[in-house]
Image (cartoon, rainbow, N blue to C red; front, side, top):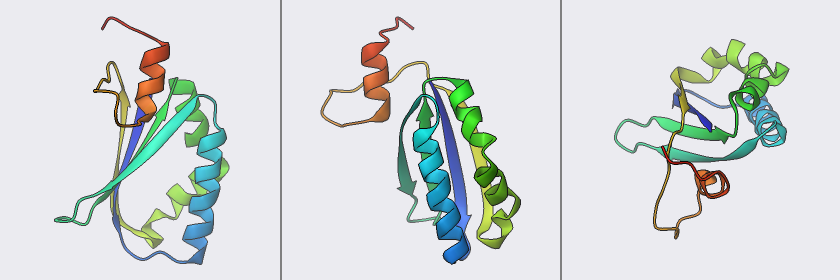
Length: 114
């Protein structure tokens, strides 16, 4: 399993941003092996973090090469005051089973002794 964490500082969003963001979100959900996402905001710094999960690196790369994603990346300075992307391989995820999470179904179906 792989995750892509998109950390950014918001500048100003406009209608073009919201349309592009919606298109990218739809493409992500339709990409191969997409498992889900979550979002966090740090109240102290104002930074926002979106974490997306895929079964394979190929699925993540499918979104990275999507024309709408490339369009947004090229225009990011219009809407963001900086960003950082972290691509990770998730080797383990576990909990008490009470919180729904994109990693739970993957690791339940693909039991691994890591």
